[in-house]
Amino acid sequence: MVPESLAAVTSGEAPAIAARREVCPDQRRLRDRLRAMAADLVASWRADGQPRSVRSAAGLRTVAEDLVRRAGGLPTHVGWTMVTIVSEFWRDRLATGANGRRLLLLPDCPHAPGTPEHVGAPDEVPHVCGTACGITTIWSAARDSGWVVGSTRQAVSSIGGLLTGQYDGILGVAKLDHLEKAFAMLPAFALPVAAVPCEPPTTESDGVSRTPANDCHAALEAAAIDVDWLLGLLGVAGGSGAPVGDYLPLLREAAELFTGEGLASLASRLGMDPSFGLGMHADGPGEPMRHGMAQRIPPLAAAATTAGGFVVRGGKFLRPFITLAAFDAVQTDRGDRRGTSADDPVRRDAVRAAAVAIEVFHKASLVHDDIEDGDRVRYGRPTLHEECGVASAINTGDYLLGVGYRIIAGLPGIDASTRADMVSILANAHVRLAKGQGAELWWRDASDKRLSPAESLDMYGLKTSPAFEAAVALGIRLAGASPAEVGDVERYAHHVGTAFQILNDLKDWSGDLENDRRAAGDLLGGRPTIMWALAHDRLAPVDVERLRRLAAEAGSIGADEATIAGCIGAVRELYDRAGVFTRAAAIVAEERRQATLAVMGCKLPRLRDVLEFLLDLAVPDASLPAGADVVNHPDEGGG
Image (tube, one colour):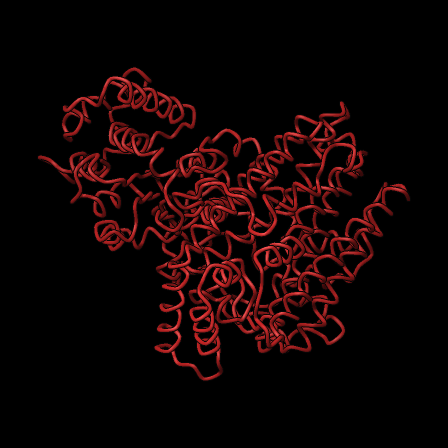
């Protein structure tokens, strides 16, 4: 596979010369042609069997030389092509692997400050250039598809995780010479290790980097990191790169709304506090907001600055993308002018502002939820109440709610009827979310911890689904249609949101790296989950009582790490005995099936494509553990 290929490419009679000679094709069109030819080659092996000759480095090189010659490439592209052939060979295996059992190793973004010699970047994570970074897009999509994500700086040590059974497959994005060092001990096609060679920018003798200025996308393409193709290799959106590629401009547009400049511009247009857009620059990485910001921000600007800073701090910005994509799809389906048209800038500006509003509401809920749940980390940093104190955090959440409604009230070019419908959509989502959170808090404070699976799913539906529904419905309504007339958006969002939340709970048991939560964080936080409900439903009374004691002990104040680890291990054994994880995964599969049926009922084909794409992003097939057969919902006969 990759290792032996690269070892052969960069070794021989003159290894130093060979290493310099091998490069990535610098033209995207040539890279795509070679990839297509590699895919055809691998497909022929599936039909006729893989020739024994290609299993050696020399044989693989001969095949790659033939592809390069036919594609019109250069001899220096042979090593890159060898790697691409092996990656295509493992594509299906990697794309459909089990949740938490595949490792993606990403490089620093070539457009990130200080790249390639970034000083102080943590070894375990790639360094990115901002919220709209292409590496961030890959990172988020991979995590949502069940991949574990790390930095290419961990490549050598990660191979050990594959050999010991920690991972079932590895995909690395790195320079050719780095891949050779990491994988040289493995024979071609022996283990599911694939790679995407890249050429990060070098610093010239005059000290100037050749990274394209102010353009992450151009920098990635110049480094031969083609985001859409890589997402397809990861198995996002059904395992094909094309659907993701179609939506990449919108994904980027959504992320770029959440820069300091973007928020400041919006605040200026809508007559809001200009400090709202300054939050991005208020506190540096790792600098506590309380200590770093209080010295520089006037008291009257504190609420706006703190709120703006939290909005741009992190996240996938999936909900704003949904609003933009739904709007564009409905306009196209109805034969209207495209929302991105320069001939209709006012309307497009209103849609972008509404997309910001939906994210602002989401961030407000996160601030309040973190307080209520006692969470300490969000987006890899201390939660807002840990940084600023509980009182200031509550106020920030309240401020964000006001900002969301202020944005909707000031949307340009929107008639009164549409504006009233939008307020109704958001208010309904807000009330339902609070109802679900209220049910959870009530359960947590109750002495009786019984919870039926049906009750758990009802809470999930209330806590997660309204935000998805509101994001879709806002885009539909701004395009001039009614959500009710195009399909059952509420049903679709209910099943997507419920499945999304269950998947998050399942990930919690394998560690949630994004928020640095310990394993089984919901158990320690005393939150009602489907796993807890299924265990109560399927365990004997004596085991149920033991489960409650273990949860209380692990979540008690002063419990040390050894006690917590022991309790979690014992709970995991009880969950395994009850078949909780398999059952929960099966419920996710059923929720996905129900969401798919709701999509089929959508009357608009382009909108149907958007809903299918969102389903793949939020509840990817590849994230479901093997054996997750569809079953009827517990206590409710199929949901």
